Image (cartoon, rainbow, N blue to C red; front, side):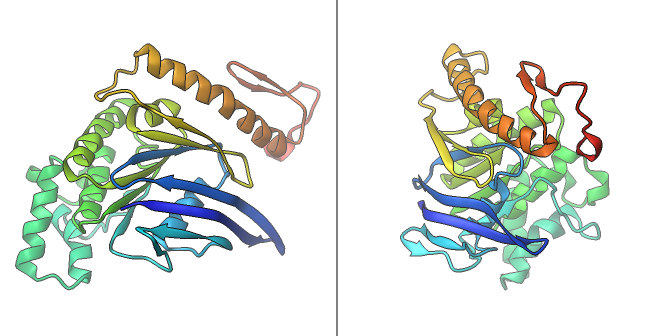
Length: 279
């Protein structure tokens, strides 16, 4: 399914004031495309996921899925968050079955479908295990299986691998690409990791510091599987990092309320400035 955002803005009330989180965001994601969204902290990336999922309404603009306005949640869209959010009292099978049960699918059908996707994420031997018996990467596999078992057309992923170690993250990235190529669904993937975005995506959107606006679009026309050492990929990463650095600079300056120098190793604030609670 294709996703189109037209002039989407979102405003929240905070401490008695209105805060513009997103402003005039327009983008297009083609049917079956894998798109990543990159941006600094607090720029509205997660909010955009909530809007597309129909969990929050936009303040202005509209969101279309296959030319139909998004007015609320739908079974055509599912979300995988950074935290797996599994039910601790249910087994892996029970967690993957849960959404199917809520959808009114018969016990036999939902169990068969749940097993299908548990095997697809390589957890067949752990179907009767409980969340506390699983590693972080295994929990995310369960969350992905639970989402895919609903047969969505669109998979929305909000930094799903952000809390994992580098080795597990890389493994799950490759597994996700395999699932995407097999199932031919549309994926909208939020991340703060430039390398992750360029390895995964057909196209990367960069969003500015708050209020978030689409700043640039980067097509990644490099065949898969991609090597992170590919000079073409490294060139694109440097372009993105150079542009993203400008937005990170705005965020840091706002948060510490001080002038600083953005050195290669990170922001450096003069020692004579007292950061107080901003640290």
